[in-house]
Image 1 (cartoon, one colour):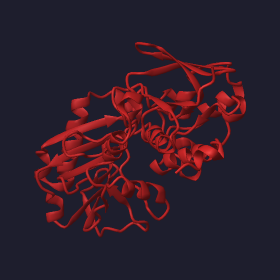
Image 2 (spheres, one colour; image 1 turned 45 degrees about the horizontal axis):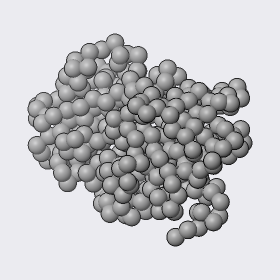
Image 3 (tube, helix red, strand yellow; image 1 turned 180 degrees about the vertical axis):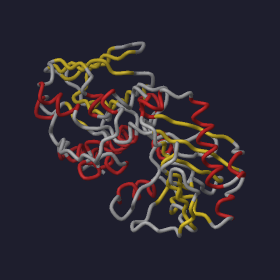
Length: 358
């Protein structure tokens, strides 16, 4: 018997936003997330709400995220940029330079980007959100789609469509029946998972001592291990974060606590002894997350490779498979805005009698 239900695979921003839009349209859905948590690449620290994944968005060119934050009642604020920046070159003393204000306004969500995940999840029926549910196989049949999951009660069936809110490279690893054409799989593998090769260190402090010294918190280093550092504070507290410069392979060869100690020591070199005593600190290496990164993601792409994935799976599945993750977000691919854009396109592709419901 044919069903009107849509399966959403992936509980990051794209998957949750898809569920949110379908819920408001009165369309039945179920969401399956392999992790024990929602959010995907969006992750904020439990204490302080400091972002370990994406943090910024630019409302001038990413209006959907601003609109969604407002719709969900979330406050936004501008990235702190007042004060001087620091430059650390190999073998030289730290230099203090006048800071700069980026051309486009960079905004953040108060309390961390994880608030987006929380706010969306709170508006969805919990019984339709399945965690610990790693997808292994998608079987497309005349009557609909059937999913095989690595969890208890492993088979779910009766779906009219499957929306894949996961990176294309992870989608390429799924077992499809009937199999996807080789050229389609090749296209999926060629799409880098944005920021999957990176790692982020955050340190939370009792006060923003760098601001008190006339510093913005921005620092750029050729010495490392942090290649760049920024202010991560908000109304809830003071913090610094940095992107690590060593490659994924180099990071794997290092002990985690030792790497965090090296990051902390670098903050002391940059900002002084006050940086030696964070309230807490975290290191998130996305390259070591198998539900984010594949072996092809261990080396960072040299450019932001935008690819047109429109209809890539649709035409090989009688429109029963669709990519809705951030990498399918066209000109905003890889960004949070890209996730929203990909979902909007999926919704617009629904029959008009469904997508025009209030």
